[in-house]
Image (cartoon, rainbow, N blue to C red):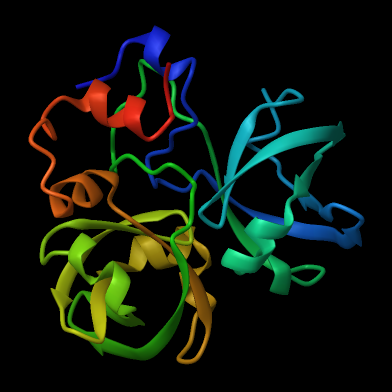
Length: 222
């Protein structure tokens, strides 16, 4: 069910369905963090200064547009918590524009607020998919359940299994092809965002079914 337009106007939400793979064309440290420049052919078409773009799972605001190059200011906290600090020139990144009220929810709601920088501890192949096992810190274990949702580098995925130390997701060939996961390998870092609903359920919120209250308490709407 789509949220009304007035709710989404005050939100910065994403679906976890990557629109295109962008290319890093510049990244430099500034006095207040870093300046990131990304080449984007699709998401820049209707981009405006201030618009929110999900870059590898992190919500960033457009600060400058020059042709097909979008610029973003990245604050120190984002650099510390995500993999963006490790980006290099010509690295590929997953891109998605913030969701519109009339958009289909192909994935699940992502805020673009990365919980932690995870490590890929194993990559496996099985019929019909590629499995990625991701390290799971103890403080986030309550937010992940089997068959639940998780955002990895901005991609909405279903959790296949969970242990005390890690969780596993499987990607079909089409998802591998349309995201940066095709280049991922054991030992790589990845941005992890657990499900916002799972966070409230884990805290035993009595009104977790009232989505407006959930979003308001997290500060995504007034």
